[in-house]
Length: 262
Image (spheres, rainbow, N blue to C red):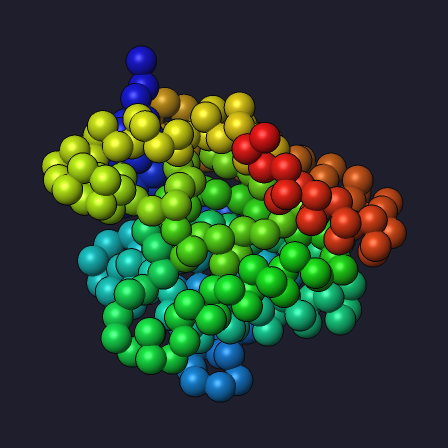
């Protein structure tokens, strides 16, 4: 039996497909856009425009590296405020031009450095959540690896929330939870079981809408099957959501988050 801690370990594997892998295999003609028009370009969040078959879409993803050098360049997938502000700039652009938004979530959390706090990390996360709740275009959010804390929530307010089977999604890491609640980070395995962070747990709690199956050993071992199921679900979801009026879209999104966990 695969435990919650096993899922955490699988979600963190260096070989696990990253946001760019999904973008390159699901979409066509991806054009990356850079910068928040205020401070700089955060490489831990990538974003841009692409085609989903013939449909123009905006894509935003938290990007980890596949080796030590890439992880340093990508800040281990931990965004700074300028990353979230870049994401928001692109989401508002998508709303202006009527493009659906797809986000890929894979982060151990927002970067907790002094500079990030000085530049308004908390405000940037909260602003994204507020703005995403009111965007008048379909939003599909996909947890592909780790989805931890406000670092994940900042790009996870959507109409459909999808998780890969071995992904995890939680208020903070099991180590952080154990340190706070048990005063002992070594109890992370116990914390993972109690936190209800797996895709199955969250589907049962009505937090997520869909689980994308993957091999027990990880999505990288049958990536083409994972991609095929995920792409079809994205297309179907967008087609369904585009039948709604803008007012219905926003109201349904509001009610979705009001009813989570009930």
